[in-house]
Length: 443
Image (tube, rainbow, N blue to C red; front, side, top):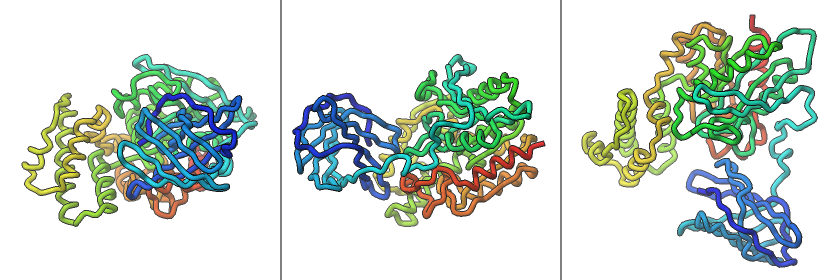
């Protein structure tokens, strides 16, 4: 929805009362997209930037067209967006428009981030934090943070390499201003466990190309991180802690006997195709579709996924004729869905094709090292029965189904993605303790 832009802020009227951050949510069907406008004054000029936390976009410069005691007008021409509203003491009531669509957007003063995200670590730290780099097999320079516990009488400490979930992620796996990996690193370091977390290739300070990468590329990056961490003399056992796709990467490396132990937080154990089909089914459950339309649509989506996966196995990436595919399946589906499938096929990436072809079970069968697998019972992205397959394939693994937790390991009401931003908790204390105890009890 919101993309980066570069425009110049203009001077506003001296009577403009705005300062600080103002937050609101765009209602986009079942989704709510949080937006934050940040106002400041420099040399008499009102400055404004825009954040879209769910999209990882921060500090986007915005043009202040007008700001008076009771009126506000902003422009973001490079994304075809404007915002106008009426200002009162504790609210701005207005409309956000983009590319011909208008949405009501009311803003209110934003709470300080330390109130909204109280678990985010803040200095001074009782441990050592080192900015460092390591090199991936293809030469990409991975920018990382090494966190080391305070020195003790123990000569060596256990450590984990943290692996993010799908999509471009920074080293903190930041989403909606939550920084789960920073929270985990802080908790582990305070309790005698070191960690290394890094920006995904092509993200933040890391080099490399994210768009051409697949899960196998990210696996090799993690393997290099494990090798790098083992170069430190005070580091003992080295494990891989992965969230979501990162959990699947932990399975892959476990099958290669790379880490000494692995921790999966909602790592996908079913096939990539089955996982994405379940996510599509969940999305359709929230849409106004008849059961017949839903089942027909899932048949077509499944056939498209099969085609993309088979192309990946053959080393191909050829355009798929969606209309012919729908005709071959022999069902009628809404035209909007046909259009959506055409966009999926057109915008596919090597990562998507590889994920659809992936069978995590073949890696799980080969795991011999100690393993902890955690899922939340309100997870709507990787379903709780994910643990059943893990337990079948890795009988010695410790599996924990945590009540009331979502995909991010937060205590949740619905488990839906739209709820993530509303939750103050970044990471369940029960999960933090379970991970710590698993590592400390390794033999």
